[in-house]
Amino acid sequence: MLGPIGHGKTALIQGLTKEKLVYNKTQDVIYTDNFIDTPGEFVQHRRFNIALQVTSQDASLLLFVLNATAKEQVYSPNYAQSFNKPVIGVLTHIDMASEEELKRSRKQLELAGVEEIFEVSSVTGDGLAELREYLSEVN
Image 1 (cartoon, rainbow, N blue to C red):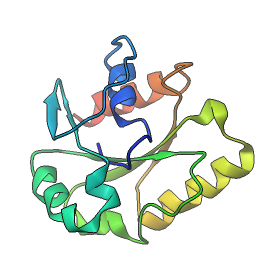
Image 2 (image 1 turned 120 degrees about the vertical axis):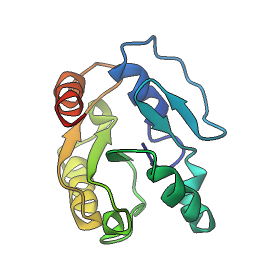
Image 3 (image 1 turned 90 degrees about the vertical axis):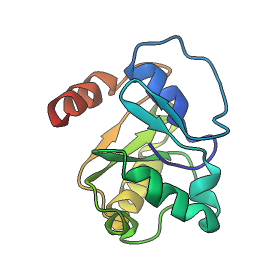
């Protein structure tokens, strides 16, 4: 699971594992259940990219997490191809995003090269069942 600070990686894991949502900033790589939660700094500061590359070797699937309301370009075009694993995209905060923001965010993930995109809200639970089902099928 990778994405910038504040884009909902840890909350997404809590939602998928049906834990109580508790904000907890990830300071380091955390292996929990069937997930690897990485610090947002690893995506935001390219000098840490090697840490993502190394950590990805322990995963069978990568999730590029993106807050649908974010204005900045997070993932470089074809960034997914720098990993030797399948990559899906997960748009978070969909309960707060406009249709225009959702469209722009989907486009960003498509340009990054993800194979499939899921839209979720860890607060309302929208989209979590579909993502949970997909993850159970690929594992």
